Length: 357
Ligand code: F6R
Image 1: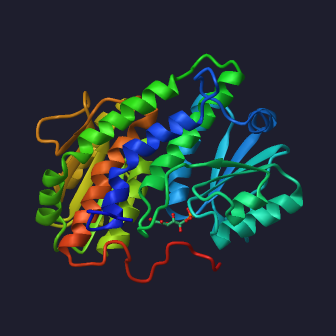
Image 2: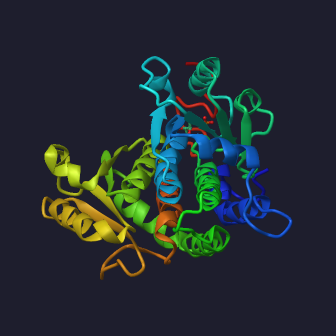
Image 3: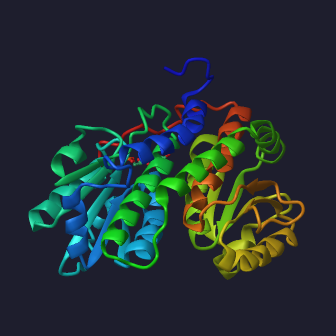
């Protein structure tokens, strides 16, 4: 039930800190150490490549998962859209391991790939929010998101939960490989949860920015590099699907290779800056957009921020910053949709789980 909330989406956005804490609690052993089903870990240790297969928001969580898994486990990762993989599968390595990401566990495009991969005989893991769902029953292994039912069509808490579960998985596999880089994931996810709470408290400011800059625009951009690019893709989907503003998530450095032609006086462009190694470059790209009349908003992590930035994210581990960055992005889309008079929880043309190919 949505209780006192006007919309499920707002409730589900607010639940995210609690969901992260629940995930940390769930994925630990009797001694309080991070833990994942040993069989999953053993299978992944044998793999020469991980294939993440998903649709929509779940695929965007997959891109962040790729970064987490490659950094912490040193296993190469490919991310594929289910609807593409189904008919044009990539050339596979000898020992692939498949991860299906699906909030509902019922997405037909993803199920079709799972059925195929099982026929080929490769090991499969479904990460889902729904115990007993089709993708969970049909895969060899399941990891649950523990996010509670997600009712709003626009996925919010499932996205952050998927990333958190992938972070846990990456850390546990990396550790059992004895790699030098380890992250105290329980601690770091706790810091993220606290940071999310701070961002969630900023609703008034976010609503005001949404009503000022997203109330009438026809198009918008999110830009970033690296993890900020992956977050931009998700932020853009969130904004477009419920506000109906045509929004693209773009690799900041790629804009000048064509798409910058679309920037006009007042076009909203939201820059994401959470990664130190590319912060300066993204700043440069934001400058290019601003000088062409774009209306720039910046979401930057504390320490990488500059005067005039709209949102300062509390400092977190650099691999986990997209979790915090998503809070203002989700809320911007919520308020943009609200101010445009749309049905926030049930946007036109969309269904919560897509059970046709
Ligand atoms: C967007 C959204 C969709 C789903 C996609 C996959 O907010 O919710 O893009 O992410 O349809 O659904 P699942 O994760 O249930 O397989």
